[in-house]
Length: 302
Image (cartoon, rainbow, N blue to C red):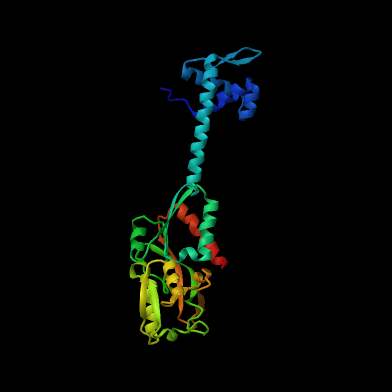
């Protein structure tokens, strides 16, 4: 019905209604008085009512103007909120960020700092963290179920076309074992694990890490002696603490201290592992791009 009404008409009306003086309202609104009077006249014509009683000495709101003023203010406030939402969304300050991670990623200080920094910088972005392992990672990225994912792999992972792979962290491998274990006081190499019962991740939860570990061991002539396969980091270290076997872990997990565990580094040059951040090469969401900026700064500062 009121096809010609614009937000500027409402701003002009509110300005005059609050000043009750056309000259002062014009100065406040940054326009000259004649165009302001003309715009108010157009608004009244559009509405079909008088909003102001004007004399040479005063300007007063009519009853219609008094009723219209709260609604006009509310409309302007709502428009301002809508504009603000659009601007925030354009900066990646709203929406969701879906991050996938491997079992040990939350224990990596740089990753933990990055997630915390992102939550501080973008508190209104819903952050969803999901543990994803193996081949499900690339599928989840391609299906946009995940925006980015942390992957542990000694070598650059092959994730398929259209997925970018960024190195985040390179770590040494350590052996977690009881303080009274025969190997606890020695400098260790992979060969020292010959005939030693081991606790490893189940294939569906740590296939890459476990397969790479087995490859390192077999590369120096050691056949892994598997005592138990587990799903969780806590179970891995808990069982090592019971003495049923030793566990090989990334250096970041050594932060999980226990009176029943010690950590000994493996001296072999090949005893390393890395964490990579994978995400779509094109079409990453704004929250994802903001997170990539944060973790890249963290990685550069390591």
